Image (cartoon, rainbow, N blue to C red; front, side, top):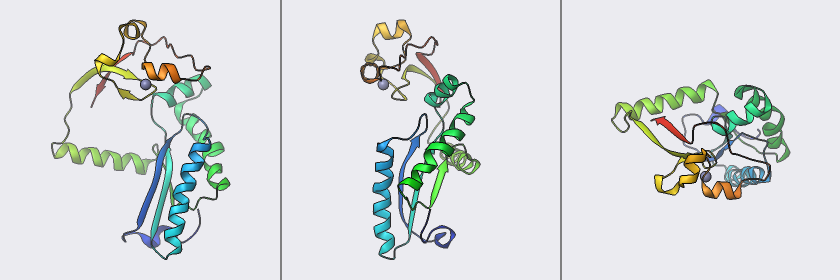
Length: 188
Ligand SMILES: [Zn+2]
């Protein structure tokens, strides 16, 4: 991090840019560096014009893929992401010389508390409600699919990857998991 950043801009409107909060199931690749550099380029230009700028990047440390990668590595999810962030993700910011103002991790207390406040707020205003939902879920896409998009074979073989992900997955990523969660129950 560098440049006119931080508390000086608190409370004032800034030109705000965020990269995607990158998924941290593995080390960063050139696509992450490219996206971070594009955001950096944009925010540097606005900063150079004397505008207030806030440039955020960070990592999403939650999800089934993270859990599976940690399991495969024989460590806890937190140990997995701690190591990756320290050894792989933060060094990339130095390599590309990104002038980000903040780096958020979804396991940080500040993030967890704000997310909880957000959900409490929309629940209190009646925008969401709790109910059970069951349906085909693709671990690759990380989303529920319409029941019709899931073939009978996939359901019976308990392969929780959609046809597109099965086709595009890396060869070394043999994902015919033995788990029984081809249909997951989600409580929203
Ligand atoms: Zn998929």
